[in-house]
Amino acid sequence: MARIFQEESHTFSEYLLIPNLTTQACQSQNVSLRTAITRYRKGQREQALSINIPLVSAIMQAVSNHTLAIALAKEGGLSFIYGSQSAESEAEMVRLVKSYKAGIVSSDSNLRENNTLEDAVKLKNNTGHSTIAITSDGTNSGKLLGLLTSRDYRLSRTAMNTEVKDLMTPISRLVTAKEGVSLTEANDIIWEHKLNQLPIINEKGNLVGLVFRKDYDSHKDHPNEILDRRKRLLVGAGINTRDYKERVPLLVQAGVDVLCIDSSDGFSEWQYETISWIKHNYPNIPVGAGNVVDVDGFNYLADAGADFIKVGIGGGSICITRETKGIGCGQATAVYNVARARDAYYEKNGVYIPICSDGGIVHDYHMTLALAMGADFIMLGRYFARFDESPTKRMVVGGKYVKEYWGEGSNRARNWQRYDEGNNKGGMLFEEGVDSYVPYAGSLALNVNNSLAKMKATMCSVGSLTIPELQAKARLVRVSATSIVEGGAHDVILKNSQSVDL
Image (cartoon, rainbow, N blue to C red; front, side, top):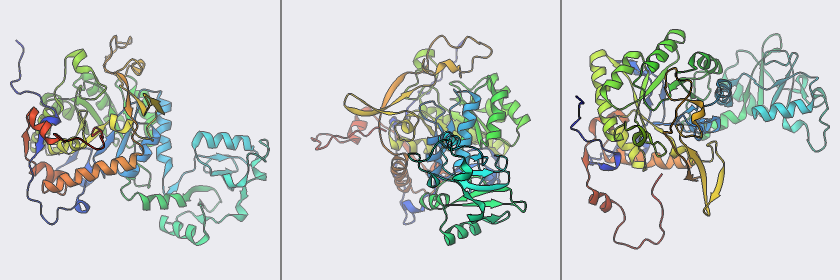
């Protein structure tokens, strides 16, 4: 006979935080939003992969490409490049993020001296990089002969068949540094000689890498950006349980920092097998799994070796899994229950496995509620889809600027059959997502910083300066339908009506 849970499932909108004592130390500038996103043993938290703000972007075609990944990493968060594309295309997006900023960059824009300006323009369009290293063999480790930048030619006046050796700045006129130079020393040389880039060469004159002035300036403007040991931006990638044996090697080769299996229902043997294969073949690459909504689902994926676990089924604004398949749980209840399972697992095994709340966020304060209820970080789709940096174009619909936003379970995306259907090559016969628009909201940085300001202010009201402290101190109360109305502006005529939704 079926088991019926007596507990109701609830959403974030049904809860409010009760304030705690706000001490003089509780000021926004003192709040740290840094959080671990991969498993670690007790007393070894510093070994976990961490991000500086608890926000990651969803594994969706309309959300997470390389442009959004770069913008979010600069602000301290992490993107998971969408997996519903060819493995080669996804790997290239990862590569673009990893090469965007890297202290001493291994050049991925290289030509021979007998290549033409036409070749240079095509390469620039493909990579987005205007600095091209000219080497003896056209590789990033050949003997450096010169540099070609956009200042060395004018497209309106230079013939496209002109060879780059006649346009480039030859090495005899370049300021270079020897292999072994520190990043600090390289930046000092750049400033002393007023350079935009500094080539690093070895004793044989072969190219080792490049240091760019813009990277130094970028770090000053984005102090929260998350970098790997080689000073490159961090980036994640979504995978499925079907072609992971072909996809994962390409992503690892491209430099991916963390993987995540993407599915509407993660409590499956397919995910267990995928995690096991990755752990056997790439033990140093963390992989998240999910989605689940209860204790059993969490424990299954934890035992499988998942480095973090996503929580949430059917709570996304474009997800219709609940009404289509009749499975899921209110997001607030799911996060709270899985968080308790995580804590119990930690007490029993001495291993902490972070959980990610995925879906159900309507207002900014819902983010803080998700963290208070136990989430270590939050995955957002609609929130990021509204920004300049997301993959879709801004358009006018009904006299308002919007951007397209569709679910990965929608007809538009489902051809990639990313959902776990075992060996069913025929794919799904029904949809679990819709195709829609979201209001255009401008730049990512402006909106993210505004949301984080609210989060920090709320944490201060709860007397907390870190996410773990928030979870330990948080006190929540259920709200009635009438108290929700009372919480907003009411019984007045607003001068300027503004939407408060994300």
